[in-house]
Length: 367
Figure 1 (cartoon, one colour):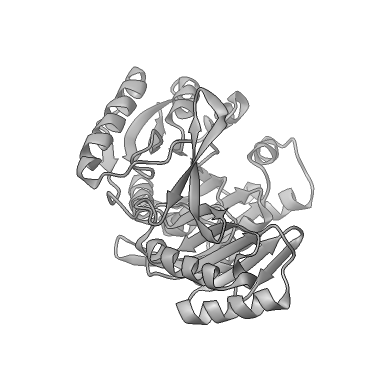
Figure 2 (cartoon, rainbow, N blue to C red):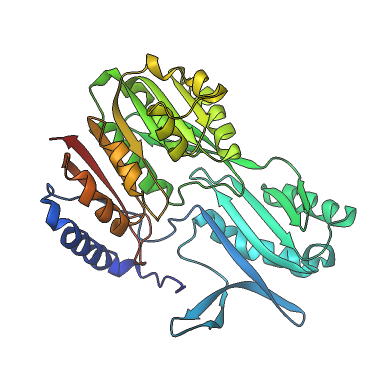
């Protein structure tokens, strides 16, 4: 993959290219005017990972430039600072490197460093090794935690040492509210927290005036949308396949005093079968689907998008909110969804500046 070349002076230029491409891609569906939500032009990623490259007595953070003509051809790129990463990550990078260089226990066979930070500056750092961890490592790592005011996790093959805790608490501010999110190490979270706030605010706006009906959410993750949207609806039923994310979603419901939402560990395909009466069992019975009145479905699928059967399933709902990290697969899905629904709202969320990627969202209303 190409390492983003960040030039804050050219931010508007790169955003215009994405806007034009998105409008071209979706023109077939005659959408309304595109709503564009900008990112900070630098220091926008709250999580990053770097390889640690060893050269003699030196070591440094590295990423790899991959030759598109020959993917096996990789060029090591040294990174002492990284404009993509949050200011907290950039502040930590030289301090950690100095600590690694000064300590054999910390540096020996260190392979990778992963950062997870928050808008308020909380930081969790995972150090990944190609060797077993020992008490000398733990003693040095605990001292480093205290010195830098961070949390550290050590990983090696079949070993994971959590020194303080394995999560951070993110605070997102939108529409006069502050929402609290537990974000767990090695689990998916939205990397661009500033844009995430804007995305959640947009989703709240497109689903307002729904307090007498219910929301079903597929691929809910740690409850990112669930928590923010719960007050718009009578009740919310969310599904997620990851055990870690389901547990974190429940923690986030409690942290935000969300009492009208429940999360079930179930794939989107299994849930569709349950809705159709094709699947039974304890988890289906516990959902009590017959007590819900779903007016809206929210889906935030992986980059591959949805299969045809899932699209047909979505078509049964009055309103569809579809958040996509891959506009091309969203456009493919719309060839089906557009048969029953029309696009009422259309948004670009610039989660990934200076790359070819962008997040987008549509709100579809039944024709």
